[in-house]
Amino acid sequence: MTISSSLNASVAGLQANASQLATISDNIANSSTYGYKRATTDFDSMVTGSTPGTYTAGGVGVSVQRLIDERGSLISTTNATDLAVRGGGFLPVTSASAVAGGGETPLELTTTGSFRMNAEGYLESPSGLILMGWPADADGNIPDYPRDSDAGLEPIQINAGQVTGSATTQIELAVNLPATSTEFGADGTPETLSIEYFDNLGKSQTITVTYTPTVPGAAGASNEWTMTLTDSASGGAVIGEYTLQFDDARDTGGTLLNVATVSGGAYDPLTGTFDVAVAGGPMTFDIGLPGEPSGMTQLTDLFSPGQISKDGFPAGNLTSVEVDANGYVYAFFDTGMSTRIYQVPLINVANPNGLKVMDNQTYSISNLSGSMFLWDAADGPVGDIVAYAREESATDVARELTNLIETQRAYSSNAKVIQTVDEMLQETTNIKR
Image: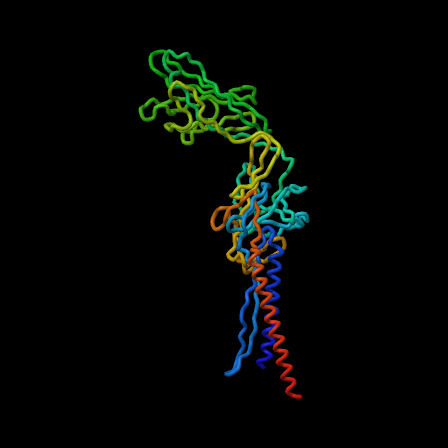
């Protein structure tokens, strides 16, 4: 009966508007929740079969969706490990309870979090989420981990009392020697350069490099120097001696012409390097290629150490931890040095709105979301990671209040229809009397 379908349609309208009221109340309640994604309610008309001359009301259907791909504004904070994703992608996290249990750590996704070191050194948020990442090797490099699974991810744990150092294994020298010192009549005074390096225990040691010019006995210039290296950790013993011959041609004047090895590792003209044995092990020196203006040169009358660069750093105490835009996690020490310890990738899925919604603004992979892929931050379809920042709620309170008024009116209208249908049914009943 058509009048009965009107009653059913209005009841469905009450249920649909009650669902919309629930999403509105949820959105308003979470208007100050960091990283909250607003929920929306969509109505769909339900059509039933009708005969000519009559119309049967089908009512309304309702579907609720969480707009996970809708991002809120970023606000600045004072905590270095407050993180937010600017653009697409999700941070990998897991629950603190899973980590404490010592078993598997199920992967969860989020777009923002305030992470601080807990008692065990894990970067944990107030809601009990622990940030995950790929661990770096001893040299600070990130190995090739699987990108289509979370197999390489682990909870980020930092030793707050960490004291660490890294041994120096290579030194690059760019030094200019005075050309006038190899001319006839020069006094032959050596030039000396002291280079600090760090041994295997993080202690400071010194390699002294002495450049002794070869002064010719007749008019002219030899353009030749003897480079001697001594190691303080070995009691000042000579660890390498090399004869440097410089070019005096018009186009290549002042560059290395030839390097002869007297002692120590052999000079490789293809790489411009040689190895010497310091007390803690081998060390590579890069003095430049023959004919190239970088590295060792012999020009003018000045002794000028242009550039001295080396790896390694002394032992120091951990002072802070920071995450850069590419997701690299760095530990900073009171010696002024830093080292890379983790990389936080960003997770991308084909359909973010298909993710399974969980507590604390986290999500998990589902059949509707599609498979995941782990990208380097600021690469591919994902955005970058912003430190000292949080993502605000995506709720627009003014819009939600407007929707609230509309929902209230719609609910009242459906209730009025039910009241009217009831009165009509009462009139129908009265016909029998």
